[in-house]
Length: 359
Ligand SMILES: C[S@@+](CC[C@H](N)C(=O)[O-])C[C@H]1O[C@@H](n2cnc3c(N)ncnc32)[C@H](O)[C@@H]1O
Ligand code: SF4
Image (tube, rainbow, N blue to C red; front, side, top):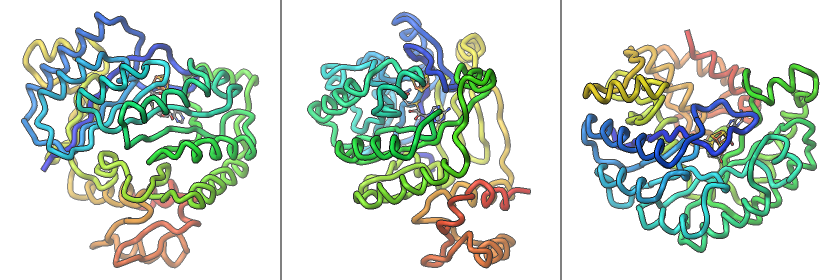
């Protein structure tokens, strides 16, 4: 039963140097128009009862809180649901945060990326470290008791000492949840161009691995649980919505370019406004791509996604039992309460382990 919805808001004030997410500059009128179409799309979908709602982007916090409220009013949101909004510090202030809270948002995921002014500038963030911290404190004052902060590491020129300073700062702030991603050099981004023209350098693989190990040890020592490859939380504060993805559960995706997984179908919405609006004007679901997932693919997804959950892992079944035993012998997986989880050695080469389940 589907009880999760992802809503994509494809607008940002400005594009960060490293980012290739589906997002555009906008005006309040463009955003208003988009919200009207989003509401129409939601009305075209089956009316599920939602236990988790996730506004992702782009920068959903660019929306007017009343627009978020209008969208939420259309959804059948369960009591005690987790309702998350991604926030860019530059797009909000205390009043706006309070209005989001009044609109029904009860969890924030704030993009901080670094607390070091040098790296913030280098990767094209519009906010300073001080502004990011102020927004976090404003969010607390506005009543948010479930906040996630995003950090990035392996930034060009970054040392383990630099990473440590970010970790000291973030753990002092004590958010309930921390997502920490190593920089992906996405082709076509300004940062990538600066790599190609020799202006910037990639972090050495060994140093990146050391940074990751350091991050894990540091955050664990501060009471955070490393429950997913890139995600840490205080006990009981795991991201409920994202955990459904990793558990291969169904979810609805709404908005430009959003993906969804319903029944045996994985779909992706149109990625340009003309197609997206055109289909909705015809009372059609704005799909660009629909893919039937067969039993074998479903199983593959179950392992690849499930093994990302470092505490919970997956139960081995059928033809995959031998594969798990083989990976256990090699020291990449270990059995815990009848399920398989990645070992620390497996975690360091997680993508290679996941590949073993494809094909
Ligand atoms: C949609 S953004 C979060 C909200 C808001 N747009 C912001 O950036 O403040 C999702 C997160 O993905 C991560 N991210 C985006 N592009 C990345 C890349 N190329 N490499 C690693 N992490 C990336 C960043 O940590 C970012 O906070
Ligand atoms: S990282 Fe966030 S704010 Fe920056 S361009 Fe990507 S989606 Fe927009």
